[in-house]
Image (cartoon, rainbow over all chains, first blue to last red; front, side, top):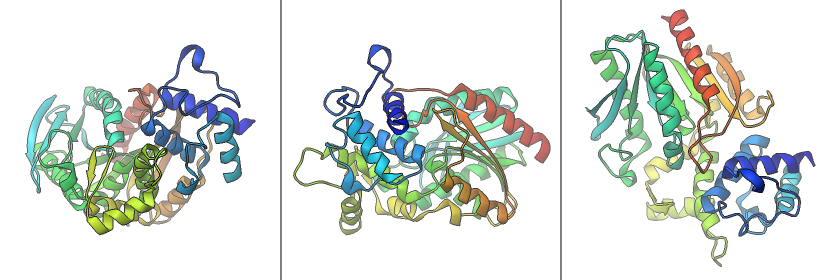
Length: 81
Length: 272
C-alpha cells in the first residue's frame, strides 16, 4: 500500500492535478481517463518513479496496459523493488 | 540584465549576464537537455536574479543549436557544448575580472559542467541541481517519448531500437528534436562516478524530492563516495519541494532557490 500511495503522489505531482481529481485509488483509470496524461507525461512519470525508487524500468515492460490503472502501475513497481 | 551574443567556437551564443561588473564570484549556467531545459527556465532565471541581487555574477548561455543561439539542434554535439561552456568561462575571465568561476549544472547540465571542470583548470567549484548520474538513463528517459507515442501502434519504437536507428541512419527525430549521434552517443556513455574531476573541487549538490524523506539514493551515494576519495569536497542537501524539471506545468521551488543562494554566498566567502 505504501508503494501505491507513493506512486499516486508521483502521478498527481507530475501531472499537476489539483482539486477534487487529486485522489487516486487502486482502480482509478489512468491512460485515456486523465486528460493531462499524454506521451510526455507518461515519460515524466516513469522518470520520476525511477528516481524516486532508484530503480530502472525495462522498456519492454512499458505499455499502455501498465498505465491502465493506478493499481496496475503500482503492482508493477512492487515487482521491481 | 544584459543580453548579448558571445562569439562561440561553433557560432554565436545568445547569453544573459546578470550581476555587477565586478562580481565577488561568477557562475555559469549549464542547462539541462531538451524539454527539461524549457521546464527549468523559470527556476533558473529567478535564482539567477536573486544571485545577482547578492553580488554574484551569472552567465546564462543558450548552447549551440538551442534557444536563440546559432545553429540547429540537429547539428549540435556534446563536444560543441563543452566548448561553448569553456568559451563562457574565458569570456568571464577576460570581461568581468572574476577570478572565481563556478559552473551550475541542472540534470544533464551537471554532466556537462563536470566535463568542462575536468578540462579547465580554472574551475574549482560546481553547483548541481538534481544531477543526472547516468547518461544512458537520461537518454533512455528522453527516447521514451517515442515509445509512449507508439503505444497504440503495432511497431513499437523503444529506446534501444531508436539507438540502433540513430547509429545506422545518423539521425532520429524524437519529440520534435532532430538528434545527432555526436550529441546522443557521448551522453549515453557518461557515468558520473567515472567523471571525478581529478583535482580538489568543491561541489554543492542539491536534490529535490516531493516527499518528506532524507534518504540519499544508493546511486547518488556511490558517486559521492568515489568523488570524495579523489579529493572533492561535497555538500549534499535534499530539498523538499516540487520536481520542477519534470512537471507538465511550469513550477518553482523557492526553498531550492534560497538554499542555493545561501550555499553560493557561503562558498564565495570561504573559497574566495
